[in-house]
Image 1: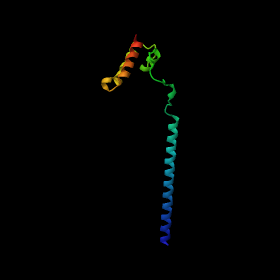
Image 2 (image 1 turned 90 degrees about the vertical axis):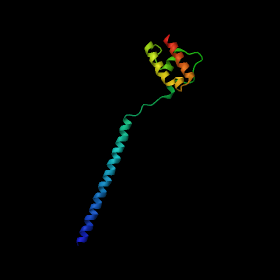
Image 3 (image 1 turned 90 degrees about the horizontal axis):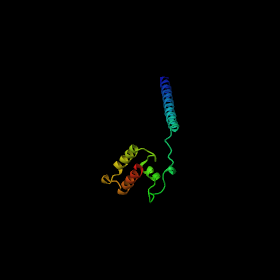
Image 4 (image 1 turned 60 degrees about the horizontal axis):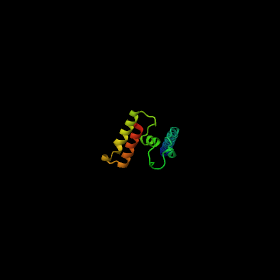
Length: 115
């Protein structure tokens, strides 16, 4: 008689324990789904790669091309042009592994916009 009671209690304990585990797994899956949904509310910005300048450099640099190279407006003041030039030359200087051609184009753009 006591064996049947122990077997019944053990079966009930296994059943309740299994049910608790299943519910915990369901809660974890639901919270993971909520996290995925919350990430979708704040998506990363989508880049329109068609808005970038297509092609290489023009034979004679224009004001538009100079402003695209330096990343400033055509009517930017001298301080903004020099700051953009300095930023680009720090990363693209030939003495630090940059391209001499790109450095020449950056200098040309500064001279064209700065004058």
